[in-house]
Length: 265
Length: 346
Image 1 (cartoon, chains in turn yellow, green):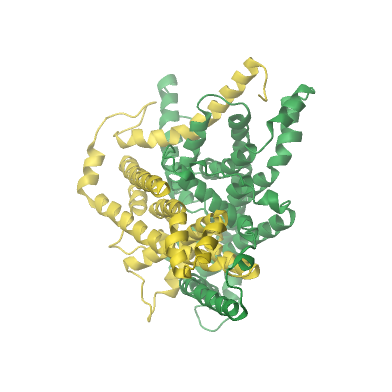
Image 2: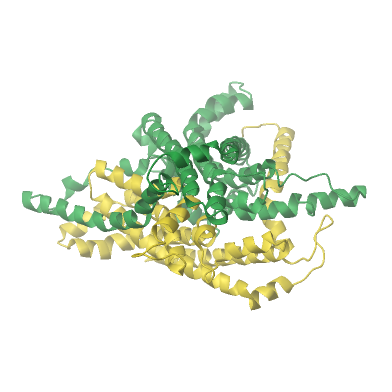
């Protein structure tokens, strides 16, 4: 509608795809293509193979995938609990207090992830809280990093919530705990699953803070991908990356199905 | 109130990441924005409370305060306290005592000054690049529609679900010394080497950052564009305005807050980006987060790492605070700020 002439419109679309294809479409495609190849010296990859995936099924990579999934699960559940709690509590406070809580909970997003990792290293490397070298410190770092997103999603959902439901329930004599458990949380469920998916995906791909603190016996998948590409095994790295993307997408898909059910209730 | 999360109703038609991504940009929004949605919440609570007798009310405020404490205490223990320790450590030289000596030592290093320049230039470059590319692509998707455009914008959303280092990995296969572009060149010309070898330079990092950050600009822009009244466009066009003039005088003013929000977000993300730089693996592309990593883990110089970390945090947080203040002053009317466009975007 902005460009009335048909030929001009075609030119605009051509330009669009000239920008879009190399910048957005190709990167994901080449990673998938490379994961099935052994070499890439021509225009297309060569030496079709499934060997990289067989290696994943047998080697450390499977452990890394499991490590990543466990870390992401633990971190996103903790973050969701903390974020929801904070958002619900902040909602009851005055506007000024809310702003302070907002600023506090969004601060981890403005702070570089590497620094979050460093700060945990500095703080928890000595007794009484000696976490350095344990899996818990990785989970803790991921939790700190994703809580802001959980908090923000829930806060946004809370402001969209029609207060009438809550008021009705309270007016009919329901106690606050009952209102929270039977009215508010069920209404928030779609947003909560969306926030959980977000936290999970972010934690699955977290590299910066993890590089600072991972112990030798708790290597998440992104660290493995970096180790593979760093020693020059680009094609193994590509296969690992595909495994990472596929797992993330599967979990997101599962959560979105769950959400569909939740919103029909 | 317009919603940007059209999929949030759970129609199940959305691609896997879409709703999640909506949430991410929403959070992203609020991380740079003022949390517009939050501050604009209607103050119905007190008035509508069924029990407004005196005692109940003050007891409730007390209870509410008590409920706020646990999450804040937890955040304090695992985030604020460690961050404070970093600042403390940065003023603690190796030879004991407390002074600003570590700062003078680090500021005197050429590597630190280079990293600071690199970081700022790369973040600024990535912001400009992502804004231009995001604006161009969003304009076409929104106003020169073509079949499949909606699917494409969802595909772009998918990018937000993936970690940034995947882009660098992909660029290695696209423009690396062995890779698609150079392979194509050697196939066609028969030369031994392709012409492209820029991935281990700052340009490689810049390309990866622009690619990765552009969706962060497009998401709010597309939301803002969907709010533009098409009647205005048609009126302008029928009065003889050329497309470029319509973009400049009708569309851009409407989208400016979202553009600013997206740009500020990318600037902060760019200052903090680590994965892309790490995967590039170039010795001469060192940024502040990278310097924190090498100082702490490879050199074992924790005090130096803390100094660099404090500088990096100061930069990012100052930018973020400045942006939040700016948005709360010039963000337009409250009604507008709670609109889907701004919230989804910022």
